Image 1: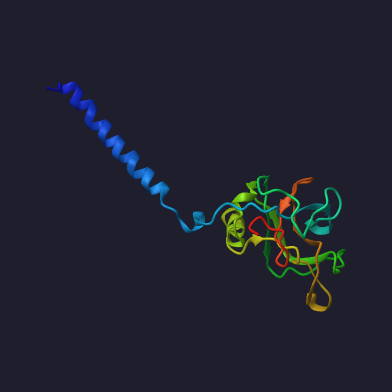
Image 2 (image 1 turned 90 degrees about the vertical axis):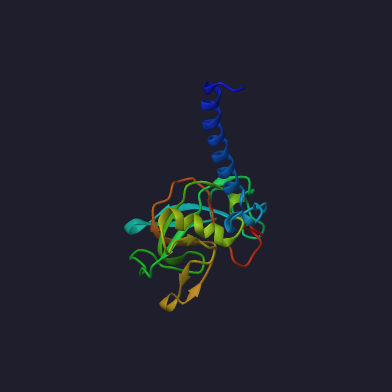
Length: 185
């Protein structure tokens, strides 16, 4: 026969066990964001190349550690910030002359908190890192985001200018839409 003391301990313990079991069940249910397997492909990374006029920054794969836009240059196991971009139609500031290799992104860049590349298992997952940190309209920057020419109607690659301030010497996950150089490839 149980004593009253044992019964008092058993009921709260049973309630706690049931709560833990329910929470574990909720946490183990896969969600759309977690349905895809972790990314394993090396990804493209860029860095700030130079600070420019009026709070602008030049970003790309030039200088310092070279980038590889054809195969990726950083293993998916690495932890890096995502290069985030919000395009808002900003006009080219004085002192910047966009060209094929250093276009104007028409907006602002920022670095997300560092994330493991394996978490970037789709372009949607990568964009969601930027949206979660900076809000609607933000997405992962892409190799061809630089615009140049009349009315900025042409796009180039390898680097671009944008408003923003990025940490010096930090490699940032950057997308490329026409090569297999993304963690999700």
